[in-house]
Image 1: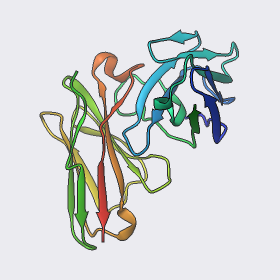
Image 2 (image 1 turned 45 degrees about the vertical axis):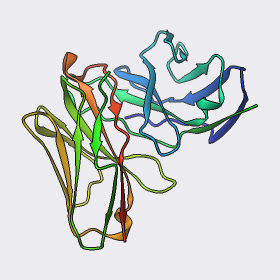
Image 3 (image 1 turned 120 degrees about the vertical axis):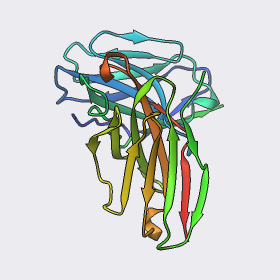
Length: 114
Length: 116
């Protein structure tokens, strides 16, 4: 799986958009970009994933550059409850389950403040 | 909606003892993953199962073993426990649609194992 690079920490004011960048310059054509977050000592929580098109769901938006070498997770209106470690993960889209594990790197600690 | 259930939530064991962690995946999920997260560290992949067969293996010590049963629940067995095994252990499951293609994994709340 391709490696990803994320800033170790970011701050965001409550109510503002949080934009979390991720570099994955060695991503392959069959690899998806996944975002998970982990609120202190809880199980990682799935946020969103995409291949090459921008994606949006009730939690966030994912913007993937045209060359797919980087992406940005956008939390449109961050709240205190969004304070967590955010992981950007590149994952092979396998044909069978289990082989396409999630490999966690060092994520971004997002701190949302008043 | 049903989530991934892990038991127990907390476990305290002494060195050299054994421990068994259980994971009950979301219904109709056929793939289970196990992760270990030490203090201040990121989750590390241990092992995964698909349709009751081991499908991938990570940095799992030889003292650990795991299996997936016919009802798709999984157990992680840990023997000769060491102080360094103290960690959060997470289980995740993926749905069967597409055999795992382009599917997200859902995590349980973890088991906190403390070895004293």
